[in-house]
Length: 137
Image (cartoon, rainbow, N blue to C red; front, side):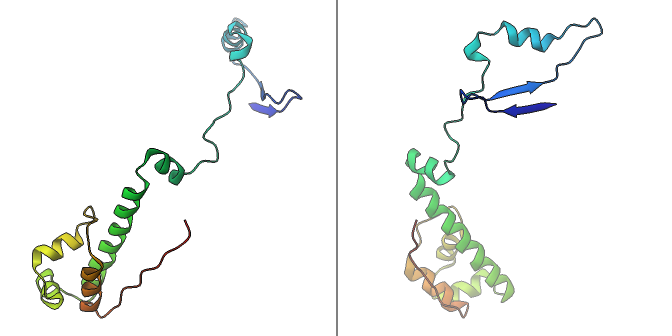
C-alpha cells in the first residue's frame, strides 16, 4: 500500500508497507536505506504539462506532421465519399477531368503535396464543396 503526503520541504514522501520475508527481513527497506539521502526522493518530471504539439514544435517537425495529418483526413473523407457514392477510381478521375495517377496521388495519405485546385475538383466530382479555414493554433 502506498500513501503520499507532502512535507513542508515540498519533497514528496511515500509511506510504504514493505514486503517481509519469513525470516523477518525487509529487503526493499534495506535497499532504500542504503541509498544516499538525495536519491531517496522522486524527481519531478520536467515534461508535465507539455503537449505533443509542444514536443513537435521543439523538434521542428510540427508543420510536416500537421500537413500529413490533414492529408490523411482528407484522403479518408474522399475515399469514404467515393465508397458511399459507389464510384470507382476510374470514374472519379473521369469526373475530375484528370488522370488515374493524379487521383492516386490525391488519395495517398502520405503524400501531402496536393493543390487546392485538385481538392476543389475532387469535392465537385462528389457533389460537395471544399471548405478551408484558418483556426487559432
